[in-house]
Amino acid sequence: MYIICGLGNPGREYEQTRHNMGFLTMDVLADKLGIEIKKLKFKSLIGEGRIGTEKVILVKPQTYMNNSGEALREIAAYYDIEPEELIVVYDDIDLAAGDLRIKGKGSSGTHNGMRSIIYQLQYDTFPRVRIGIGQSKIIPLVDFVLGKPAEDEREPIAEAIKKAADACVCIVEKGVSVAMNTYNHKPNKKKKAQQEESETAETING
Image 1 (cartoon, rainbow, N blue to C red):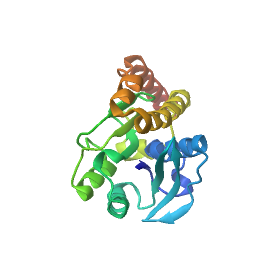
Image 2: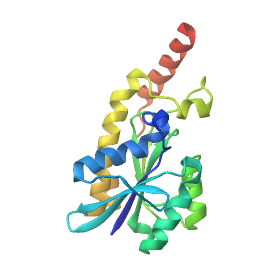
Image 3: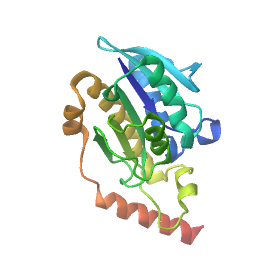
């Protein structure tokens, strides 16, 4: 059994923002697997289904990002899962917009949602799928992550979300090592430069 959790903030105003990459991935994955994520339980919206013969539960915590761990602590305790049976999908400002990175374990980095999860679970040995959203030298961090991707970021981010959903399936079916070898790639410096140019243009024209 696997718990696959996408991080984000509930509410219509946050639906398409950079900080909701996890929620958006759960939507794509749910559609791919024919699962409806609509049952309210464990401070989350959840949906149950299967990947092959493996039972999976898709999770979208409703606690807001900074308290994501409260929801996952309840779910992990109820189902008594092993750390490697939890997969968390979230946005990452340290990766260029549209980049994808999978790891089998690790720290929270700069992500408050992951910090909450690791604090509540008291372990960090679970797979995670990180979707790059880039970062801005001009826009304050909170405004940036709660803003919507720029026009030139939308296509690569949409593609990364689809790959993130596929990566979750791969982790369940073939293991995290295969998923890492299949989906990880180096950050795209060109994309970072293009993002900075776009932000500068927006500031000048704004």
